[in-house]
Image (cartoon, rainbow, N blue to C red; front, top):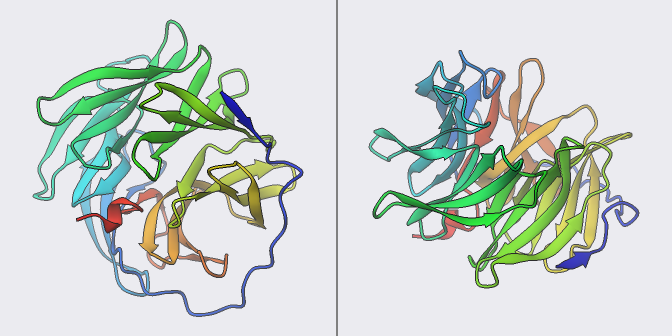
Length: 306
């Protein structure tokens, strides 16, 4: 396993760009949970945004069962529901087709489509030994098989496919700390972790998002001085920029509002959805999204695939 440079001590503050009109929203479908995501009594909604980013239409998708969106690609949505029985920390993974019909797939607590959309990569919790495992669900025959087992005490809080589709980046936490301590790349051909970025943020970095270049990613990390957004270079793990996020508690990032703006979610008493401008490194709230959390939209590379 190749160790990569640690984040702390290499972050360079970068001045945010001058205020300007945000880019028009082109990915106008967003799925988000109304209320605290993952709790019974909440509702998963489909939001339609106008070019300004304002929510102009809302359609309920799943209600009363803690529905949380996981991934959206090709008109299909992956989402979780609280399992009817306690199952070692796993939820039910469901898919919502473009027609609006939904069906149960398998058990797990995080999931993303494969780049070719022929299956679903699932993170599943195992209680003995206490660890997370990667499983593959195949759409053709509805079968599942184990891909990789994390070491005991390691859990995956987020995941994205590598730009070439032959690996997956994982945000990994150690159970004894309770927050993400690493970002690691697992490669399918080698069947092992090949790259590790150790995170030294005081409160970890549980979520991240790939940037359109395909060679960089954005992490939202908590520190004693407040939360920061950190940009790091995937091939080397080198941090290239850091941005303070005063007053914001970014707890989810998944998808694009456009090629120039990333979707993020803030968890507060009410919650809201926002956009992070890739050109100016500034943030904004999306009108009409107060009370929503865990927002998901189409993201690179899926947004650019037929």
